[in-house]
Image 1: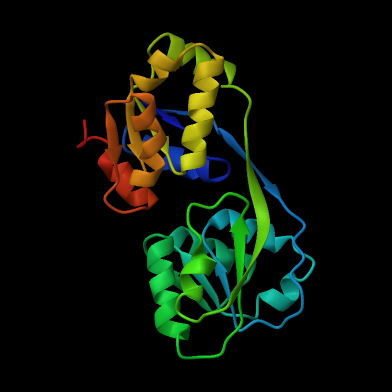
Image 2: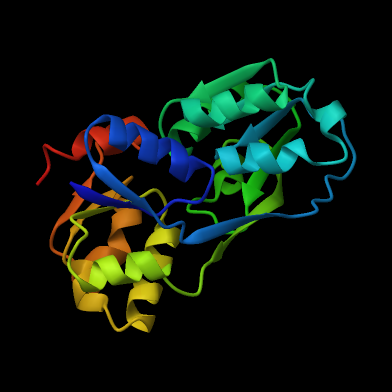
Length: 238
């Protein structure tokens, strides 16, 4: 298939390589740009750290207090984020192999009956309020924004040309914000009908929602919210 990978770099390259190994023709068009945010952490130490994406890990890596942070236990969503945490230098890494809801359940089970201080490194735009979920169970967690995902203003020229020519069979999305950027770029290029025509492979139902609202009819949702599931979805969900 002729596939378009829309996620930010450097993850887009890894996904594209995975797809190419399976015989697909892949074009990369990152529709979000990740920018680090100078986060004020307040006073420490913390009993544990929490992240929900590899982007958080990369932003934390350049924080002035990284030498202090890497000695804390860290909890992540997904094996990819866990790998990114280890690359940064964290040794005590625990991963919830699912989504933010599964991470919340892991944290509740671990900290519900304990007086602990948790620090959550988050993106500026978040799909779920993890701190509020934990607060319902008496767990206090401070949230600090460590990065933002900025929408690009338009499709790259090659992507726009391929879309106009109907040369894209499927598009992969790993976040709702990426979908919103995709639709905005399509409207700006007067190509919304063309943009809705391919198969749309989405990480979750929440990610897929804007596409369905826009009128897309060939939307497919991964069984699990991870790259392996979304890649396996391609080829059998047509």
